[in-house]
Length: 256
Image (cartoon, rainbow, N blue to C red; front, side, top):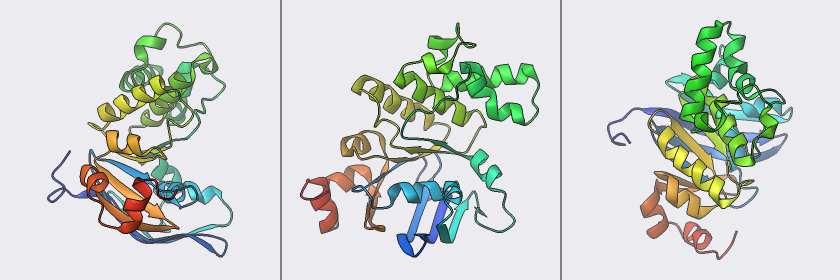
């Protein structure tokens, strides 16, 4: 990971507030995320962490009542500026969801789906598919059945396929919304190992309910409560020497 003091943040959220109708889900969130960093967002259900995560690639745009105020800057560009195309934002900021959601297509077509839309020739698509599956630690398991249905894969394999699909467009940032919650411990371990590998090439922001997972994989942890950021800090110190009473109460199981 880069030196946090000297590195330029790849993502800055500046006074970000998010509303569903009149209800405020996030209040004045100010955060910085750095290149090659894994940041974990934790907090009780309904605290706003997934809403905040989705604001980083404008996924909340698909919710009719959602409204975002403030700035979300990715690579020095405010992604909520009127001139910005949200589709281009999502190419730069990929996302992996809680439940594996492969398309009902072949393994190959799942990974090639987005790059194909850009008009790339077959030879380049083949290279992208192979490289993406290798980065997602899936190539050796599926190389002989690329044209079989992705729905025949196990849950853990499907989630790694979704990661391969997300990185096929060569994003700068990878968002993960509880990517292991539907997986068994062995598959979870493989995804966690994969995150550490992917960290070499991407900034990763993960929402997790599993505090042990946050402690294992992240460099920085952010604690949300009732739509507000209560505390953020280097993960080891965050879990051993929390600065806020609410943080200590949450990580010791006194509430949440």
